[in-house]
Image (tube, rainbow over all chains, first blue to last red):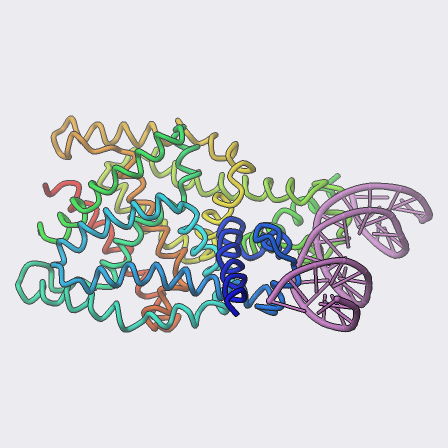
Length: 203
Length: 203
DNA sequence: GTCTATATGGCGATAGAC
DNA sequence: GTCTATCGCCATATAGAC
């Protein structure tokens, strides 16, 4: 039983690496088994199908990331502080796991049916709290009454996630080295809060 | 010879649809052949390998999109008009081809080596012209001297492309119908120029 | 150029011994 | 629980007739 947990967990950890690196369609069960140092049959013993294994991995990764984001939203910071902290922490986090953004985008777009139940769990909770924060700023007369909190959220996520997802293209289009690309992206941790806060509060 | 062009072109058009819909790893040569109404062997007769066919498709699609963007940049509009026009045209264009953003992100991230030569062709030309436009505004004292034109470009592309790539997630997280999701995204055609121009010129 | 037939190998999944 | 062996299928790719 102890050993079971170890194996089952090692499978999940290894499967995560392989799925994130190669995507659902590109990943091979054999590759996961080899990397985990076990037999291919064991994957099926624990998870029965590739699809099961994938959704287990995806759900866990998605939960981790959403928890990161929501615990920040629920930390009782002001909207302004929230935006500052988010860009700093989130971009730093993604720079260390550079395949994550493209992975989420790819799989959610290619297999939306498979994953939609995972996404739906995160509807009300975090969004509601974020909307409340925006409402407070509206009532205090600090920001535009017409601002849709969902649009603000989309903007923040777009500006932080997309550039990292598309990093290989920028590198080639701008003719940059890896270090220069990293630098360009890292500098956004400071540029983005200034920009977003300016557009929020300055008009 | 005339017939050759027809077949070769039909293959490319069909392959584009299948590759964009299912990604490189998920696409099947048999599926492309069936959909094009030809035999599978013909695909190999014209393109020899799946990889060749894919890069031919990808290069063509990438060229079309970049041409759209660059012809706009070269249209002698002011930076301000450029931003307005871009958001309107580009978001409208992507809403009609909603798989395109995720397709580019997926493939560039999963197969960067395969595509890097395609990306490099678009370095200097369009970027240079855009930088010149930004420089003019700096010299006229209209925008911040420290603004990196590449960062501005990344912001514009992030705000317009990412939300469409991630549309299935937003739909589920916000609990929206298809029509509501479409509406949320379409409204950005007007919101984004206001926001970006405010952050550019208002401080 | 376009077809049929086939080579060759890898895939996810299962049976059954231990 | 973990292994070996194998099934049945489908993938890309090629040979060769027409």
